[in-house]
Image (cartoon, rainbow, N blue to C red; front, side):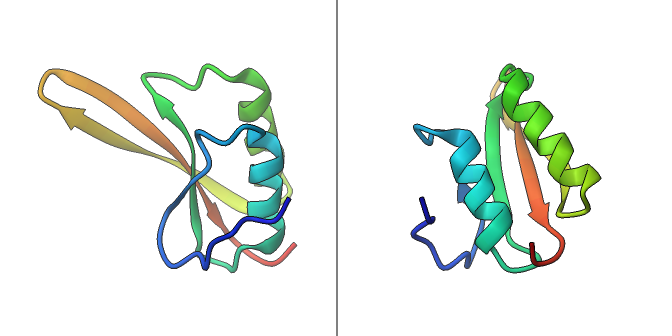
Length: 87
């Protein structure tokens, strides 16, 4: 499953039907510096996805960051992977 994007800006894989596969494609095919939003919410509820993200970070393929998104009284986070180098 290859992502159909040019990676010009942040890509959103948080709503993908198969988020691990989409994350894997991002890690394999995205250029260094590309960003993927892999979860949105008040906390990262998908344990499997969180573990996969940590494995990619430990392997040196990406950095994991959060972005706070506030809308009125509601605050959520975007969990973002930033590609470091080619797979």
